Length: 429
Image 1 (spheres, rainbow, N blue to C red):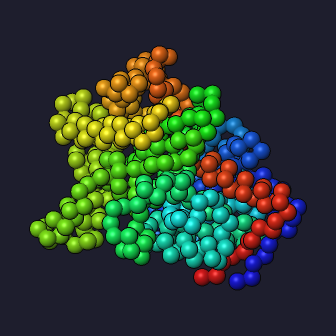
Image 2 (cartoon, rainbow, N blue to C red):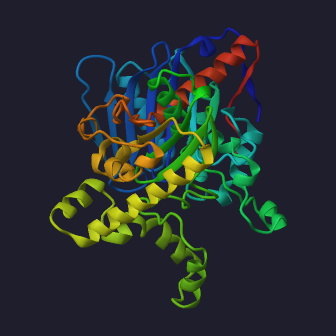
């Protein structure tokens, strides 16, 4: 590969727009942001890539009422998906050939121990992301595809990888290590990495801001509760513990994942039920959690069923909340002093019953929820604890795309300020 560096002072580096890509196995989410005011210019989603029923949803946000456009019909692969997204952006005067585009930021799920901060993608970086595929087989391959596709579309731009695992690399070694044979663990990269790092980083900072203090001054427990769910203990702006481990399966009860489970369950299923490794993988990752307990992974539907007297739904809810309480208590012990417990992501931001139930009975830890404040629906960061509470309880909407854009643009800006040349160009296959 011939790498073409961005020249100091070039239009690409002086530009103020960042395209954020989140590439899944059969989808691409994208957002175009203007970093002058950190506003969104457009958002979109391409889903069911490779199927006959592919769909693209594109919403321009540059003026007037946001009206979503929809394309349907087969989109063969990620290259076609990104090309289709580029065409929609161009129709709004936001084409990806614009000199105002400074960089493309990519969500990459697994960065291992090497990548502790946003990183410009080079040949070697991409090879290392590929080497991590065995510990992130569902995510890293799709992230790599997104990077390669974007490189082909704009070979002159810096491609920046922002890693879900990076925020958690500050965990002490005694937290990150599993208690298994060290040589075996090292040979196969078996350790606790954690995920949802961009969300935990963003939300913990926003929580400090809500309290009127610097991130370095506060200790926060963040509960990222979506279909995937994770908790983190953040001391002075640094992650010291998180619930997910080698993979996103460990920890809290999730929409379709079991969370914490006795490892011997897998041996039992193999020996007694005759299940294969792949079947057990599917069971624990896709057929467990809330959907395994009651058949639904939508908390709104579960609450509706509880109100109608459904016992399975009630049991699933209680198991979900009990796991949350365990982690809040454990992380309170880890931190020693807690300034705030913060709920975020789809369930955390929108389910008042989950927040109320998770905090109920924790008064001895200084945690109380005000029923009136908790019932308020808002898209803004807010406290839901009374003024007298020793520990704040807050709801902070997450914004992983903005966090990726911020980290991407900051990296490009730092390089420009230092007079460095940013490596760009399409990485060879």
